[in-house]
Length: 381
Length: 171
Image (cartoon, rainbow over all chains, first blue to last red):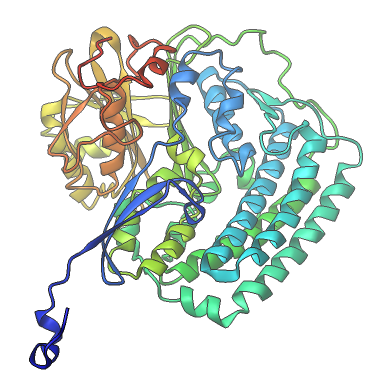
């Protein structure tokens, strides 16, 4: 069409612009799994965001209701599949609370040690994937993989499986640690500390990374509480809330560690909180190794072959790698729970995505989503 | 007398009774939390008091669980936490069979939005006043409530490939 000179001088306001809808996912590398969001954009700015979840829904709660207490173990570490031990710990604690089951001291220390190694591993995966979101392409991802495989090798030696160890049992852990585990853990911790330093240099030392993350999508304390955020997300706003300290479980009340907090609740703070947390976790692992009884039982020997619980109710909360990992349990007799509900931290953090993304650029929406550190297995149950 | 009150309202429930005594509720305690039992009619009033009274200040909604209690109707279980006073509380709301209506908490807590959508699709609770009452984890067209005790464990597979799911599959 020919444009006549007088029309060419029309001001920008007279242009009729229409909001555009972009579908992201469910198969998209930036969504970290099968997650879909529909963005409505005005030019480059997101004006609306509608998340769709459930692509990985496996009916975890229905399955748990229909199976024996011990049979359900294997499904719970498939929720947060980057830190299976943390999920197993929460589930086992719920069963133990329902049935008043005691756990030997050595088993408690083993659980905490394995859970903290899982936390480090999960945070490494965050650094890798998040770095790739911001634009380091594969570099950060591959560096993260290196440490991850070292920790997984240890998990394999201990439990026989890497990602889904199914190592914990109601009343303790499946078996004792293998010979020479202290040496192996010390070796891994050395590698982890080196790996964290590498990441600090690779990402925190990179001006482009810092400039893209700093000041992006800040969240205030009041907003974080209202939106139901937890874990590193809420600590980034400056609120020093950690279930391990606020409502201690297992042996966390005997361990010394700091709760790293951010200041502005922006994307950069969320990243830094996780970085500092991984360092704290190495401290916790070292303390577990020192304080752990040298020998003793690792599984309560008084448990019957079939666990039957007459009556019980509990809401167990643990500090999962993504936030408050809670398990609500209700037992009304028999060898199966009447109801087991997972309070999934990724689910709650993701529910606030719309509020965090609206008003930012499309390119930043991917970074904001990455900074939530969601695991879709946990979101979809 | 004072002893009796202490057992009727354990822990933080005594504090709630002191400040919100006009609202009828009963209290009990289980292995981890103090539980308040309240009727759906008084639920919103109670939660507003829990959130807005400075002495209680339950500002954080942790979790919402929906349970099918079969002949007793449906139950919604709420967990609250106070960042100010560091205390936590569980609130149970039982709905009578055939009338599964509970007022929505979305106006008080933004976090309630997804929790309530999940509870609604899983057992069929209806949250009055919810801004977006669509399925969340299940397919949007599917009208089943898988966590009802009457829903069989293995039947859901049959739905795949059936075009008209709105025709109603009653379990």
